[in-house]
Amino acid sequence: MKPDQAAALRHFWRQAPLFARIGGRLNLRSYQAEAARQVAASVLEGRGLSFVIMFPRQSGKNELQAQLEAYLLLLLSDWPYEMVKVSPTWKPQSQNAMRRLERVLDGNLFTRHRWRKESGYIYRLGRARLTFLSGAAGANVVGATASHLLACDEAQDVEIVKWDKEFAPMAASANATRVFWGTAWTAETLLGRELRAAQAAERQDGLRRVFRIDAGQVAAEVPAYGRFVAEQVSRLGRQHPLIRTQYYSEELEAAGGLFPPARLALMRGAHPAQVAPLPGRMYAVTIDVGGEEMPGGERAPGGEAPLSNCVGEGRGNEVHDATALTVFEVDLEGMDGPLAGQGRPLYRAVWRCAWNGASQVQLYAQIKALLAHWQPLNTVIDATGLGAGLAAFLEALQMGRVLRFVFNAHSKSKLGWDFLSIIETGRYKEHAPDEVQPLQALFWAQAAGCEYRLQPTVGCTASEARLLGWGVPPGKRHPASGSPLHDDLLVSAALVAALEDLPWGRAHSAIIPAPAPGWDRF
Image (cartoon, rainbow, N blue to C red; front, side, top):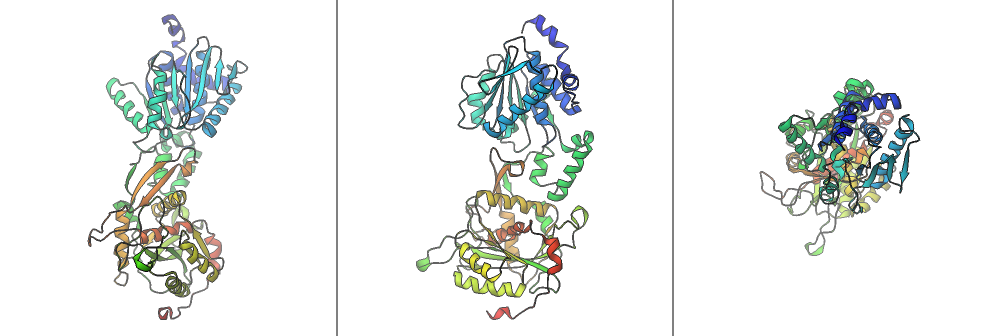
């Protein structure tokens, strides 16, 4: 752009909010307007800055993108300038972004009837063009050029290697302005890397490059948003990873301990252990099925989840996992605050046991006796592998009250997220130390030894935004005994999250106090 042309446009770059308000009857929020002004300034004055715009979910990030893209197409329309917009996937993300831009172009009186679409993915207004590309691993993007703007939407989902090799060079010839849009996740993502680079550049020259907004800032301008986020916090807990990232723009560690001391403290209850049901109380049982000892010492496949790569803690045989059973008291009356009266139970672990190397016949006989003793309203059982057969027997025993859970990468991830939400809202409590429960110390050791790793899953909904791989890693040892540490007791406890969608509030009045037969004779 020639000096006189730049001078003629200089007074326009602060008018992106005016473009939206007059042309499109849309008032940008203050945090949107400031980001639009700074990006437009860099584009129109050829500064070549690199921005990071990190907004909470549903706070206007996509609308701002479309408004800014339409505004820049209009201001650059007299020159053959090129802009490129990258999304993690073509369908649905790039297509959704194109539809939003079309809506803005058609709705703004300054751009209406002046634009056209070429080749299905290029938008032209006058001589300026904006090209939409997919950032998926297999997408062919060689040949595009970004002379004035290179933007990456949901940059936390675009592979760093893909970006550096195929997209970053597009901005090289004219030092185009670069904008990385997204929602917080981990420092290891493309968005996280660019955030640190932009922060470092800000410290050097004082020019603002980072627009990191949280739910509180949005709520100050949109009270309804604040009420929505408050409900999500009450449901999941303020420290839940999805709340921290999706609404408060706080990055997570990509890997680490799933149950740090603060979370373990939330899980500790003051109620005593129980060896028998109390009259008038509701109970549920969760079962993680281990493997079975075969002739010759071989191990039959059990219900290990692919993400975990680890098995449960053995009893008697230290190298094999156990079948673990946990009994929960389900309390609808003990909840205070926003969750009270909403059918969101408090789960109190009151008793647990485990079997190592037991045959299916032995397991069935003993579990049948325990179910007769506790009379649970529902039983959740790991129905993966050998667990499928045991689940079938229990279904015949407890018609309509057995919930099958089949482990795979996605189901275990969701179970982990749901378990965390129960813990973070104070609805999961372990019983106080008790001499009759020797497995309790082992449970706490398994929880303390459990690790996680966040894995990207491009194109999922916000609630499924990442796979949570979790479990006690191979080779982990019990801190006291030095024996192999596994996660059977922990997984059994986590299966309580499978009960979350049950209509507990409606079922409460139907509970009949359970008898206590001589179950120990079996």
